[in-house]
Image 1 (cartoon, rainbow, N blue to C red):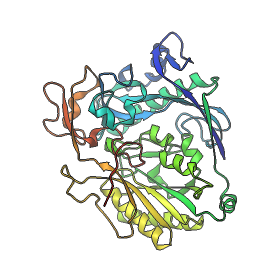
Image 2: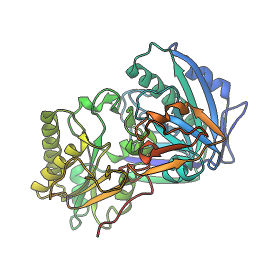
Image 3: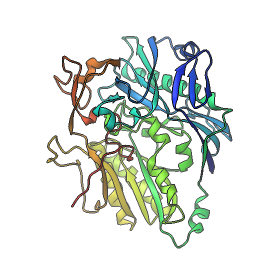
Image 4: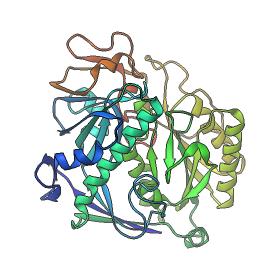
Length: 428
């Protein structure tokens, strides 16, 4: 499978009479978009706002962040299983509005939503302070159940990103990057002298409001499976979860997975990047054992010499992470783990809920319990009243002056476990 990503640079977003891309500016017909996304009768209010890097703006609570894209050549379409049909993606040409993002917010869905500050010290912790954001603030009827609420907000975000992406269908990209994933037998034979490296991509799937979707299927319902990395880059995986903001893989991050991009970077030079195994994060011990057994079996079947394993979330998924690690290591497959830490505000507590001597190569994305004070912003989009109850907040987090004292756990992607952030640590 060969995928071309046509990257169209976006330096500004403005409301206008016509939705289009011109001179690196995304123009949006506000009323046309509102008519499209407020058609769900369960929505009682919806507003659109534009924010830019450096603005004195806080967005809270954030549900998801999505990058606008459009399929211009090849099979399938954007966000298969939800917006597009069931055709496979991962090949052809997809145009990307690079520098633009859709951010969804509104009355809280789950208590593990997040914060994006577009300026101030909090902006340094989230990559989404650097994007030009169309913020969709959506409130639903009071009698809507949480899982319905999540589904409404998810679909509003996907529809918005799809609408914006279509503005780029006839635009000549500023840059085109090509990624290819060959059939496994061919890929394994291509670089016989290089170590065969794969990627075990753990998807959040611990229960209600802890959902990730693969071609529209809840990852709780899958067994570990092989997937082309180009499918992931083309929208096959989207976020539907309400887990802690710091290490949630927003849909934007799935689309721009830096582990996959870096594995491609040195493919054929330092190693042979064979492919990706996606697996879920389970609740029961039996399911954890089954999925980790199956993951190790797949890694052995495709002949991996080494694998990177990334986690999403913390606590309970730490057990899945270590099971995947130990079972691959037992088969002689070397592993490197990517996680973050919950080591207490002083950094002195146990970082992970599980560990094993086999996990001796670990990259950390930072300590989510670190406390930060976010100064008041001139403008708040969403509902700042939730600062005291979102994960990372506490009674008294929200100050009378509008400042917020929280653990960085509350900041979107601050300790993202794919490395889509700035933090790490070095052991001595």
